[in-house]
Length: 126
Image 1 (cartoon, one colour):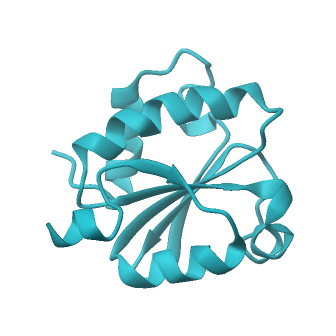
Image 2 (cartoon, rainbow, N blue to C red):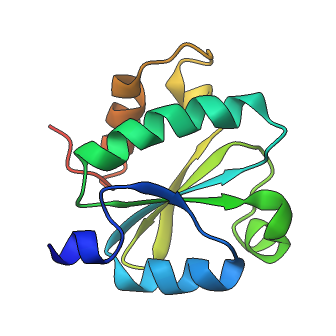
């Protein structure tokens, strides 16, 4: 219940960089997708993250428009879109940059992404 009250269990967009810091502060595990509307691969990532957000309510799933968050993109050294920032206890532990870790294909499975997120210990994956 506490997780759900903090926005876990759904994949949602946050409007600004300021919101990012607040969201990260209130949850132990956060996955933030830095995306751009014009990047087709971001839509592929969205599809998988929507499924995983419902399955892994122990983690907060967010998305943030990279074009509206230049400060964060610079601070987190985000150069490739899509990039997932994997955050644990308020600190960025790992990144999933593009689709390199996911088989370098647009056809990767949700399970492949789930496995990769599990490797970073940002979701409970067995």
